[in-house]
Length: 333
Image 1: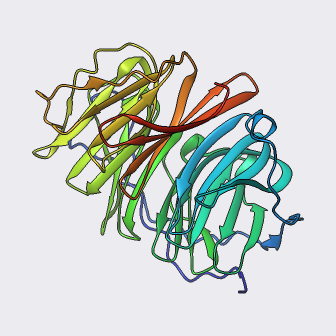
Image 2: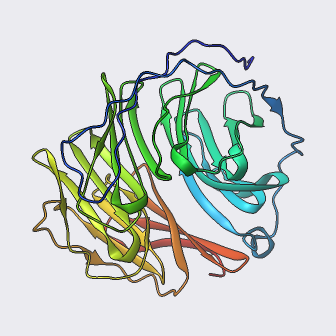
């Protein structure tokens, strides 16, 4: 498979504004000229996968995980790249990488990290490709049918589509930490000071939440069914055309969220919350994993919920049923 750089996509116009509680007001900015980033994806020096003692394998700073149709991928901030095939954990690459997040399609894992790091683990070719695209840090990623949408510090937005990578927004000032994408014309991004941006056919539109805390992650089953989480226990739900706060019952920073099966939220000090009712009147139920480690990532695999925790230079992975009961745990967190 070849990876190329081309100006195949036009950069959408950006409608940007600042301030807590921004409603429908918009500050129009001219559509920027498409800017192509010179990028060459090169195969990483990947050793042959081999089983490693689990105690050693999870003695790494785990960052995030996701599931393809064939396996589970975990990225680390300063460690290797891990993969689980349903029976055995392997370190599929030992290169020390500063990766912050990862999202999976059925056939690939798309990871992002500090200083513009992008990595693709291709399940079909069994190859790993990596590159750097900016000096800005990348924090959020969402898979697309033919690539991924990525966001980061100081309003950085990139799109990878059919092997081509390009800046996908200009004029956004806030750092963005989470993104969920449906297509090249439909997405949500969240970031500093409670700001959210909605992408539609007109471009990126800022939508205030009335919250001052940073939002760290966002999940959605559709553009009109969205939940975002962030610092100091912040949970907001997109309901009837506006953001509404949902009581979380906690004051710790919340790090990640999924919305299928049901809403599941993870955060610091072992916080794991879930509910099937995402109305502002809904109640989040706490699930006790018997850990004080910070929970930093959550994802679904088939009819299971997987949680990643981190403490110091080590971490752990929990495999759960949808009722919150434990199937298996790896690591010493």
